[in-house]
Length: 317
Image 1 (tube, one colour):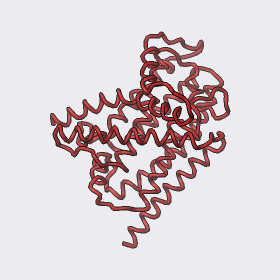
Image 2: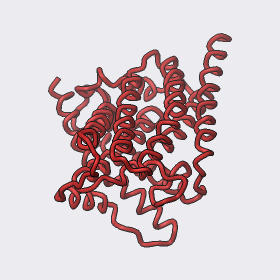
Image 3: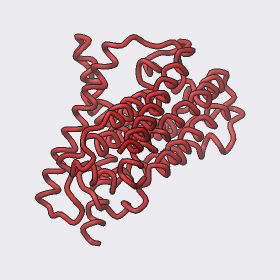
Image 4: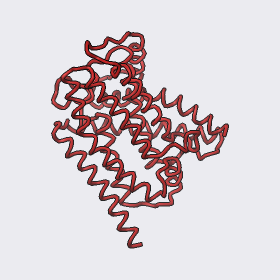
């Protein structure tokens, strides 16, 4: 019990510290690929620290929703990040690490972000919130169908037990796992507002979704939104690593030596996934907004194929 609590505390501290650094790492790698020097990977931390010292300025017609939304979104995303196993399994919150519950927490954070965009009374905020809610059914459906496939293979929706089972390699290589991976990758790209779905560097482009909802945010509120975005990116990458790259994770009840190995493996997997994301963003052109449902529809189709192939192979077996 003490070991589970210690790993959970250490995991929480690492998640909070690593999330902005991971975002900065992706930006730095992308800048290098584009031939620019790029800011230090620590730059997001410096930006958040600077914004935390500033008082937020609220829109004239803003209500309590604008004040509460960043705190709610950050809390939901932080809890989701704490539930995803990182360097070790069997943490104190492992009984709560259910994939369906995790999807609900991310949906709650999305709803808080959309409400903040609507509440400010800004036209761009309402536009971005409407688009976010229009994309959500496609993304959530693809994620839940992929979760169904993984749950059937593992016999549970518990992420900690699923990661332990896949780490042992009992399921072998399956085409269903490949399709589920591709579907979750597409959803992760869309959920984090990355290219080709949305370009965080744009201003008044037609593809602006996430940035439009926080145009009115400033000061501490903007710092919370930036931290929430970094935590969400880390959550998705840690989720993909825990399910599809479970090697190196310390088993439940292991000691400090296994933790050290798990920490090195976890950091290497996050760095590798971050670099892969930067390469993908550099190589793929930006997508227009009306193509996003088709992109997420493709993710849903891949998830459905994964489930269908799994059921067919199970039936034939």
